[in-house]
Amino acid sequence: MIDKRLLSKRFSEHAKTYDAYANVQKNMAKQLVDLLPQKNTNHKINILEIGCGTGYLTRLLIQTFPNAAITAVDIAPGMVEVAKGMTKGDRVTFLCTDIEEMALNENYDLIISNATFQWLNDLPATLEKLCTRLTAEGSLIFSTFGIDTFQELHSSYEHAKEKLQLSMDSSPGQMFYTLEELSQICEAAMPYSSAVPIEVTKIEKLELEYFQTVREFFTSIKKIGAANSNQENYCQRPSFFRELISIYDTDYRNESGVKATYHCLFFKIKGSFRKDCCF
Image (cartoon, rainbow, N blue to C red; front, side):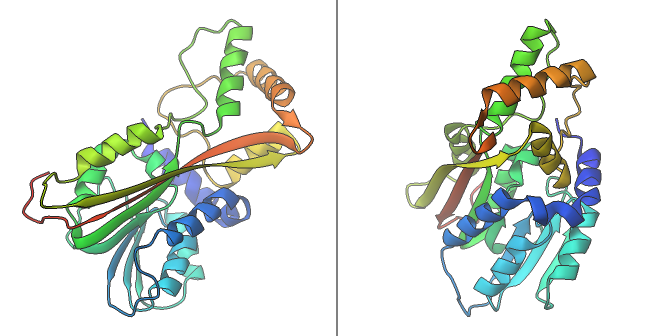
């Protein structure tokens, strides 16, 4: 389980350094824009953005939909303040709240989220809630991280536990879904009816980053606020982390540096949603 108060605190504390380190997340935001069903439309549409962070995707949405009304939500007050300061215009309403606790009272033509759903404690329930708030022809488009994210770190963590003969049940961060697991969750959140065709687009990509040292990789994670926010304990012994870093550096270094893998999952759900359907 994610400790939401700790999550909010960490992202707020690092809001000002986020953009300097969030290269993969910004690439993912650009790829989400490529999945948008309509672009540069002059129609007035209602958009909900979940996990707006510093507003990078928010600003892309403003450019893409010049007449849209956008509600941008983030759990971290520090992120919201940075986003407000960097976003011009009055078509965006920023809200500091947890989407899992937020009551949705409007319908949206587009619900979009970039690199956020991995921080939810009950993704199936949240997806069901979001689907009930799509307009009849609305779309839900999101990206998140998949099971192979930071595979090098997780493998090194387990190897270090084995080498030091530590029997604790712990991990360096939350677990992620496979593409198929997430696809099944999305399907369960949608209405089923032969008269209501639903189109689901799903894409997975690997993004690689390289660092001069393992500690530089850890610093990059810290600087975007994405350090471990699990409620469960994880090993913090200095001797353990020395061993982990040694294993990581030995097993995952090449001529480009120390490798870190991001497993990026993209989903677009579009169709004629029945507003009378029970979820």
